[in-house]
Amino acid sequence: MRIIQNMYGMDGKLSRSNSAILKSLFEQPTLPAWQKAKNMVICDQPLITLNAAVRAVSHGKLAIAELPDTFTLYRALKYSIEKRKRCLHKMEVCDTES
Image 1 (cartoon, helix red, strand yellow):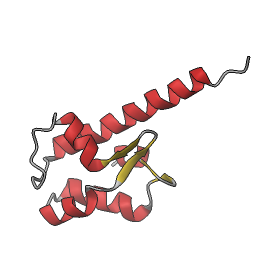
Image 2 (cartoon, rainbow, N blue to C red):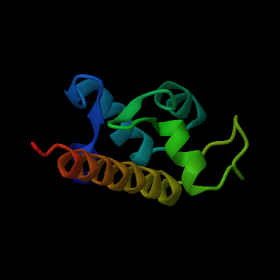
Image 3 (tube, rainbow, N blue to C red):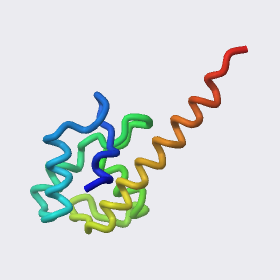
Image 4 (cartoon, rainbow, N blue to C red):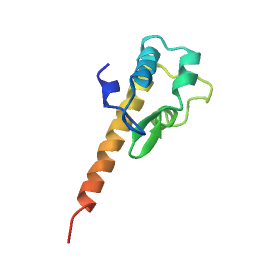
């Protein structure tokens, strides 16, 4: 999935193994796959985990142990991409020399 290629972990782009975990979560969502992926950092600036992004787009209505549907997962990834863009844009605006 193209959107997964736009995710950033603590050390830059997501590793192949983390990308594979996310891809498998989209292809065949299961509770064990969700448990494995929910604490994964998907945005480095600001720091956002998959679980935090899902809770942000579902407005906290999702139970902690509940498995999000693929549309909610997609919205969570899109949310983290937009947050990163805004954060980086703010840094560029503030990073001017006097």
